[in-house]
Amino acid sequence: MLEKITFLDDENQEAELYVLEETRVGGINYILVSETDDEDGVCYIFRETEVSEADEVSYEPVEDDRELEYIGKIFQELMDEEDTPEK
Image (cartoon, rainbow, N blue to C red):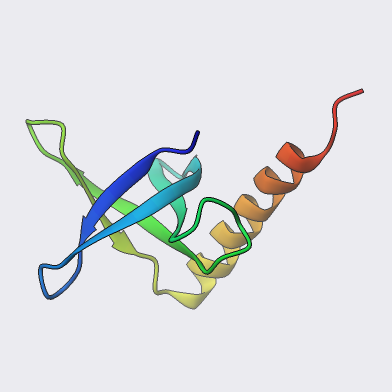
């Protein structure tokens, strides 16, 4: 079962998203999320921005095109590995 997390948007409205995959690149944590519990829906990549003393994590969407393309390729590889049956 996939982890479901709650985000607050710019208008302070709650949105629940499924975490499809997580990775750490260059010391930064990234998550791949979707409104559905599979990668067939629209996916978003978020970057961790801070962790509070209460262990609450803040994320922001990755908007830089180069970073988005690079991290997107990593997530694609990770998702492809999960889909490959083990021998």
